[in-house]
Length: 117
Image (cartoon, rainbow, N blue to C red; front, top):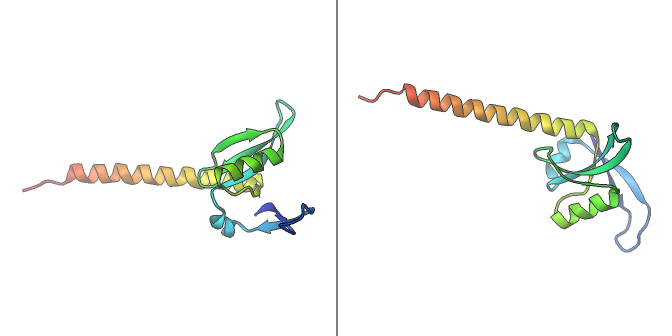
């Protein structure tokens, strides 16, 4: 489950309310997420723009509003993500890449084993 901020009104800059978005709804998010990353070594917080298909960090910002602005400029969603969501996206992408590579190896192996008359 990820959390994101939703504006109560488009006209006024009102406080935002937190809403939940289920992992099953993640597919409808358009291309990106904002992840609040705590760097233990540097003892700093940074906001990462995350690709919602691969989990790749597209950009890093010091402030959340800068990361959200970056997302809007890229034309992607600026929804906030929890670590569990980012980790799941990365794991699923890695597994999909491994399956694709294995299928390619199998196809190459099959094509080599075909004997033509």
